Length: 312
Image (cartoon, rainbow, N blue to C red):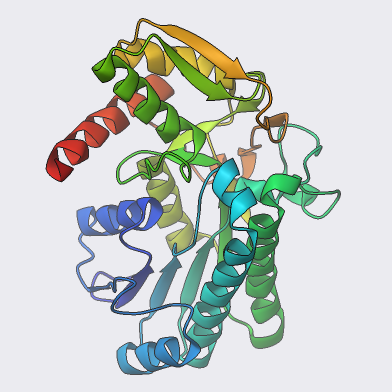
């Protein structure tokens, strides 16, 4: 990439897209093309075709997606499948038709089988059944990976994919029902502390193991991949270490200063027992995550407080 190249960041208002945009701007790339969903509906085939024909971006970061936690994934199953497939199909196909030099597709660690060997390696894809609660979203993301591979095979397109682990950070989603576990806990503990509530309910048993990557570390990795990686095989991007939801809750409780009790609701789903990524491939390129979990949660909480005040 050259600094004068036209770069389309799809989904620039979301957590991943905004982090990619920050990284590109920090590195001196100022010819960025961004469109809000009200300006460009990526599920609309004709609108996306017109956009690409009119703008002719040279590089594309495909970070636009409909995302959410266990509840949202399980409740809006048709929307998660349809909208993500449409976004991917339109952007990837138009990138091919309009001669995009390179596209980077952001997948998700939920693509892996529920009981895949840990840590998760890239070659575990499609070796077993998916976690039922987020199967439609996972199938959409698997389709995106396979679409990039197929367009490489048939048309010679330099379309690459990365699979981030659970992400958090600036511009996260704190919706009480649709958010992922880490931002959901930040919101719950903050509101409990503010309201003087005696206890906080946490979904599941607290035993599942998860890893969490600060989104700006993902942006650093994707910037490196866009510049230096040109292979068919997708790459895992994560911390390479995990902790239990119970320990995560206690860490967030400490950071926010909530002094009440934790109640684990075992009637709610746990999801996959463990998810931690093998990140040896991306590390071999010289990338390492820089932001440890406690530091990252403090940054995310500060961002949450700032945005909560803006909304008041």
